[in-house]
Length: 399
Image (cartoon, rainbow, N blue to C red; front, side, top):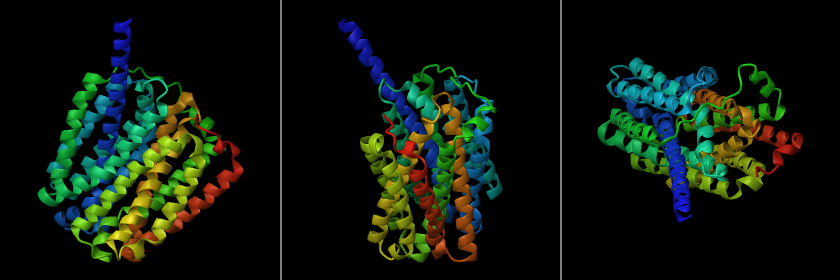
């Protein structure tokens, strides 16, 4: 009897560690996506191009993820999940080696294509893997761990990447990400169980899913929120440095606060997400809009900017997890497909936002990015209000 209890406790401990490992994997994937935001000025200087041109790194990456998430997910839908995860991490690591040695901006863009392709598959399968390896009754916890990995990418990944870039050059930042990914790759190989694909869908499943008006509205809301967010956030580093005349260290501090707020958002969701999911989504949309509207006023003071960053970062993370929880429960037999489209739409928003931000910087002014983002966020808020009125089932508990 004691032996059985001990074996059960060990198995549960292993499951927690497997969930934690997926959280670390999410941290690495999102650090490499977000970190160019903190290195735009350095990369632009190194290749003698403008920050708006360097912003194409963000747009290209995000649009590849957006375009390839669903096709690659369907192409690999029958693959055993552990082998697929290890394969995509191998591509991810090799691409970072190329980033370190990139001898031109075009080569750097090519290296980012490899990272983007591995990212596209990763986010299609990772939520379902985390839920499958999680201990019984801990599905919400597994999603929160993934979300925490994502927010830690902003908390630690982006500011640390920026610090490493300041001290050793931006190439060292990409090299460091590659080394950490190699360690995670080894741990995944040792610790994750074999996970046969549970995917039952095909391309024919897509029209069926998209006939669900609530799902379509959720996806549209995600697109609008991320387009708004990245219109402003893509250029936050040059915005702080040039418009606010903020020092390098103060800019790093604000990015640190923004990311730390993501952890706060994750904690709030794990506490109240089941019961107040829709209210949290509405409140988050309002906070993001407010942060963008006040960005130009806040940049005159590091403390005002810090408070704005905390509210903005908390709201964004809350919104991501709340929407992910809604989307993944639309059809339990098509979770990979739902998450693949979710990830693709987020990245379509990121790429479009970076492009809109670049357009605002080039054709209006760097100081206008907050207002440009707020214009899109206001449309997202109107859609959120429409959804609350139109879909009573939106307010159902996640349970």
